[in-house]
Image (cartoon, rainbow, N blue to C red; front, top):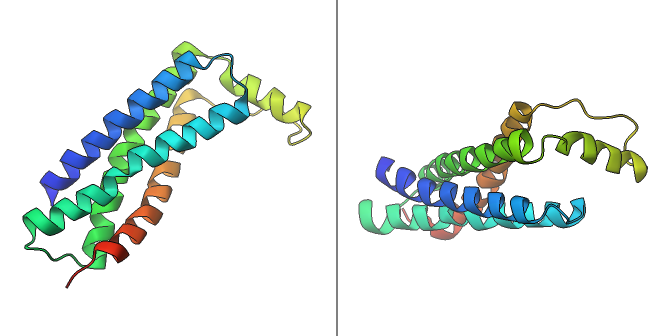
Length: 152
């Protein structure tokens, strides 16, 4: 299990990191809505490695069997690694590439009437939020993948 988690978690983390950094670095002139869509696309592409990790474990490691609980565990661990990769990319972006991101985003929300004050957030808090978000989405994908792939 450990090998499958590390292998597919690393693939997902590297994929997420690269896609996230590329679209954020090249998309400085894009509006926040487009960046948000691109962010979620990069998260879901990176989390697709959960399915492949569970399938690899089932077919190559565990003689064609995997329980739902084991599948979810594998998937959540993979998503945690993916979240760390994306969290690092987010930290780099908000700390070094665009240090005014949170202020700009807050102002956009105020201008659109969806907020009433500037968000006080640090790059570290943003990175932790991304790790948590990716892990929660990863849990959902793990559950779906586990249901599809489970064999007792």
